[in-house]
Amino acid sequence: MRYFLGLNRCVMNRLFMECPVNTQPRIAILDLSFHWPPTGGSWVDIAQISKGLVNHGAKVQIFVPRIDTGGLKRGRLTSHPPVPVRTIPVTLRQFHALSLPARLARPIREWAPTHVLVTNTFAMAPWLIRQLRGLRVFLRIYGYEMFCPFYMSLWPKGPVSQWARLNPTGAICPRDFFRSPAHCTFCALRGMGRELLPRWMNPFSHEYVASLAFAPFYRHLAIRALDMCEHILVSNQYTASLAEMWKEKVRVVPGGVDVHVFYPPESPTESPEPIVLMPGRVEDPRKGYAVFKDLVQRIVDQGISCRAVVTDPRYDDNSPHIESLGWSAYDQMARLYRDARVVVIPTVWPEPFGLVALEAMASGVPVVASRIGGLSDLIVDKETGFLVPPGDSALFAERVALLLKDANLCKQMSEKARKRALSFSWERVIARHYLPLFGMH
Image (cartoon, rainbow, N blue to C red):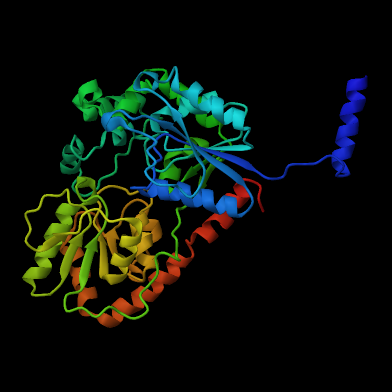
């Protein structure tokens, strides 16, 4: 009786604000590959989301495993990230489905979050979500790994070359893991090949094996885990269509761009050789460097003067017309965008979002990109740039040449690109999507 009287008193006190009520959300972000400084869009995304939520009064902490072994390193922080990051020491022997989830869930539960945002956990996601049951879990899917495990095997020095040859125009497989588990599992195992063996493993194939994602029961585990999520956040409509089974939980949440870092130049850059830029990991055949190389040759053959530039040194350097600037840091990329006349994104696979396109648009640069994946949602054809069928280097060259020759068209598209990018500023993305998600109206 005393218990119920005390309970009722506390409830009444809360109603009349006599008991302190903690309204500050505590948001734990769990990521298996986060590192700083970032080399990919998802880590920029996580850092910006964290900063934005903190600015709105939330308490945020990122949890990431720390592994210091060879090519399978995780959780490396070589400089100070803008938000608190807790690294949990884990050995390779402990990185498996029966050990890792509990090791990561323990410090998260001790931190007592009101929400947990699970990101970049790939095949391990179902095990981690299961371990976090009882908490309000939100799953952020940046790519297609939950639906197409073959993407887990795509690695620049491995079977990705074979994939690019088989998919020269960015063809999208009509199957997915939840509808065709046996077919998709076999496809993933065939694609990874020898990378399933310890000596040749990369982080993705290692994670696939460690998660037992090839086991017959894994599909059931994954379905149960996604059922447990409060919401499932995806980057584009195509991914949302793959998650049709959970359509009531799915939210399309785009990435954002820092419009204060990426902005147009105060005055147009005067250059005898306008820059045509292909940013990103050109060594990955999915990114379409072969298309870029061909379109540059076509432009040169037309006698159009330009300076073709890529930002990664690891590419097949057999074109005298293309210059590599090597890996460029975040602030260096901002300057490079401002100097460019056109940005080309000739990807042959369905980019989940296309952060480089948004950064270019924020910098006031028209983008010529493949009409595939998230790029189709981001670029307004013939207004902020051009969308071209994947692999069509002739049409790519035609569109780029048009922008190089027509300064007025380039200026018009530049202004519209910047305006479009402003709607994806981090301030707006966080206010529109993340604050309502975490009850921070």
